[in-house]
Image 1 (tube, rainbow, N blue to C red):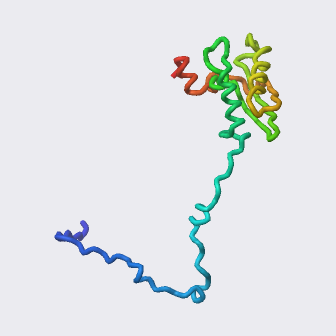
Image 2 (image 1 turned 90 degrees about the vertical axis):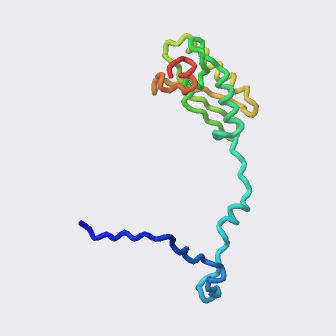
Image 3 (image 1 turned 135 degrees about the horizontal axis):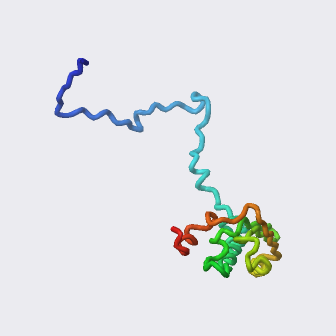
Length: 157
């Protein structure tokens, strides 16, 4: 067994608090360097950067996503974006948009018309000059690509 001793006390003295006047000031020349400016002052004086309209969160990019969310699959009552059919959206500074997408199956009844509709809707977004749609089959679409909202709508959650 250990030789621990338990001592009961009524109170413990508070440790002394540091005070500004307790600090011994050394001139900057003795310390070897001048005091550096507070790091927050530079941060707080920065001007906010403008959002890049071609990136997620930017006006053009979000406008394209909104347009894609207005296109519904004819067999499944969910928009093609939440369905997971859109694999990528790229927008250049000149207003050229490229949408990479797939369909649920290569034998989808709208295989011929859906890419054209996507191109038309994306081209109609203000600020978009031209739009291209790349239809790909690799990787193949599967239900795991759907958003949680789409799964909930279809009773899969």
